[in-house]
Amino acid sequence: MAVDMNMNVLIVDDYKTMLRIVGNLLKQLGFKNVFEATDGGTALTMMREKEYGLVISDWNMESMTGLQLLKEVRADPKLKAVPFIMVTAESKTENVIAAKQAGVNNYIVKPFNAETLKQKIISVLGAF
Image 1 (tube, one colour):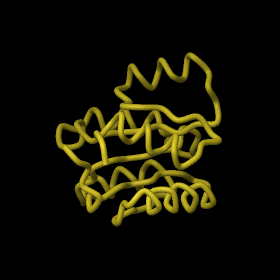
Image 2 (cartoon, rainbow, N blue to C red):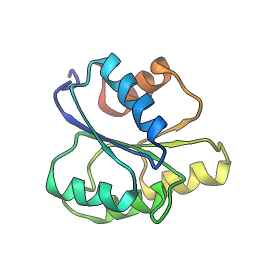
Image 3 (spheres, rainbow, N blue to C red):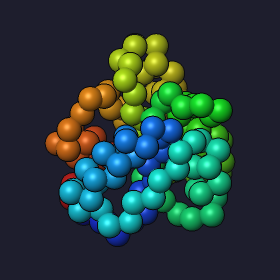
Image 4 (cartoon, rainbow, N blue to C red):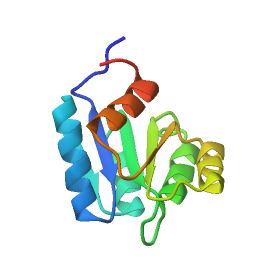
């Protein structure tokens, strides 16, 4: 089954440069509807107002971390099935384990390129 390139994709990162980089990579891959949130609280509000086919969230953010956002998403019956990819600069084993236990679909360690992002998305959503 092919990935719907018209689905809504939400990028969550408190660093504007990362939002732009990931947004550009997603557009290069063919995604047309890319949305941004600069913190977990905003992302959660956006997810409750609109349907997203994929969330790509940074781990380290102020006020609500990516892990806290993931836990909130998985605890919400309407949102718990949304595919979630965590992005982090740290490849600590305990972080990977914590994210897996919280229900993350995949994990990307910075820095990464378009091909890495594409492979992670394929592993979560299926082929393009």
